[in-house]
Amino acid sequence: MSALTVSQDPDQNWDDLVRFWEEMEWPEGSKVEIIEGIITVSPAPASRHNVIAARIQRRLYSAIPEDWEIFQTMAIAVPSRLGMFIPDLLVAPVQECAEADSHIPAALAELVVEVTSKSNARHDRVSKPAAYAAAGIPLYLLVDRWAPGGPTVTLYGESKGDVYRVLSAVKFGDPIKLPDPFDVTIDTSEFPVD
Image (tube, rainbow, N blue to C red; front, side, top):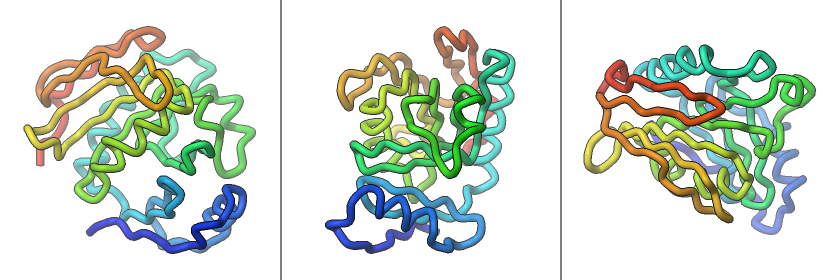
């Protein structure tokens, strides 16, 4: 199943777009994001997708400070890129997130993780990293199950404007190390392959 885009007034301002996103009744279990000013509704991720996210999350718990948390459904806003994203995993200080209603500013995130699906791979490879970099999120981990050369995991960081530098890239099966403040290695050989 692929993603669905929802038409809205192209002249709609950010606040109106967010209000529409918050107030509309969306299909149960779907992932609803605003990507480059367009509301995108994606089906719930497949089980392999969720297994990958869960394995990364388990590994991250051993590395994060007590006052941080790992969120799976927290929305982050990047108004400058007309984006409201729901990463597969988001690491952020728990205090700021606990006070949020429907979303937090993306700049509060320490790490975002996206696991591609066939329907959203382009967004995870292009639109989201540009927005995450522009928001100043220090690290972006992309688990690209559908990469043209085979499944890969890429760690991005050191953003300048809306561009990240590739810090590390591996094929499924090879370990990838996240730098401080995480200082943890993720074993990608545990990831299911489609």
